[in-house]
Amino acid sequence: MKILIADDSRVMRQIVTRTLRQAGFGGHDLVEAADGRQAFDKVVEERPDLVLSDWNMPEMTGIEALRALRAGGHDVPFGFVTSEGTDEMRQMAESAGALFLITKPFTADTFSDVLGPMLG
Amino acid sequence: MIAPTVDDLQAITEQVWLSYLDPEGTDPLLPLPVEAPAAGVAASVSVTGAWDGHVVFTCSREASLRAASALLGVPADEVTADDVADAVGELVNVIGGNVKSLLPDGCLLSLPHVVTGEAAASGRWPAAVEVCRLQGVWGAEPVAVGVWASKTTET
Image (tube, rainbow over all chains, first blue to last red):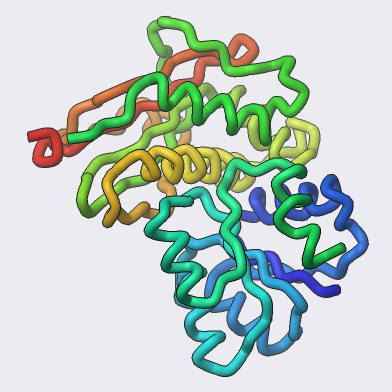
């Protein structure tokens, strides 16, 4: 599978990559985006099978990118990996079409529990 | 008005350390009531909306290099200034996001702002007051997290 990791922090993209490996999902193709706009463009260009996106990013936030994707007819499975996990944001994410919201800080066990059903 | 406490900051930073900086649990951030020396790096995020204020992370230059090294998985002598800004900015983003989850709905979190060098010790928030502060050492290096509430929010 191809996984798009969208986060404006290179450090966090690296942590997500490392955590995927630690959770046993190291064999997948990874693509990166440094903001929400890039995430939108990369979904169109690269056709990933899953998007793991930060929420708070420059240019376009994660939720704006998700809404733009759904409005454009792109139904790629999309989940948030964000430091903000309030009920309010979870409801916004769900109503925009997100499958899950993982809060930072996360562990490999969290990735395993949430992503296991999708990534095997 | 609900305000985060030092116990909240301790619980949040413990999770951050265990997840990213000290996964083995052998090198935690130890809370100590020490007077913080001049900061080498200061990173902050602002919260606006139903609650207004700032979450500020400060540490020594050495602690910031260790953090960037641990987060990126590279030796400390290979860490660049951009790596430090990214790493410390992400730390305050994660801490700030978790602080925000303790606040009323309807708040927005800003992107992080990072200052290094002499300017890091001179940050001021004249329209805000510090409502809690966690201070400690990581190894021998000073680290602190403070939450500042706007005077309008406070009243």
